[in-house]
Image (cartoon, rainbow, N blue to C red; front, side):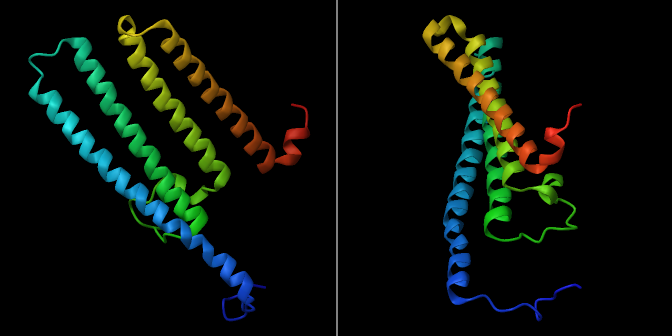
Length: 179
């Protein structure tokens, strides 16, 4: 039997008040939208800086600037995942079903999927930073390089642990079977 909203019992006042507290997260997501705008501005400034200095930069300098631009894009993508996925998961539905630009991942997003996607994005961002460090290794001290590699490795281990935990939670019966 399908339950429509007219057939549902009204929520008790305390439950309704507690459920309404999810809207306290709205200013947080709006703040992330502002951060997204700042990243767009930063990206435009960096592109302009690259274009205006293209004749004075060598290949390594151009590569480092381009990696910085990729880093900004990846952080921006991370922000979009958190803004859209977090709002959809924890605050309210966006009602974008059927929209031609609906992100394909949004229809199956939940807190576990969002954490795994975010950890993968952090690993990608960390990889870009590591690549920049390796390209410019002569300008870095070995302790900084070792620390960055260790942090990257910690991100990898954390992502694996989150993905494994999410798999155990999502499919508890399958995780106990031998393959």
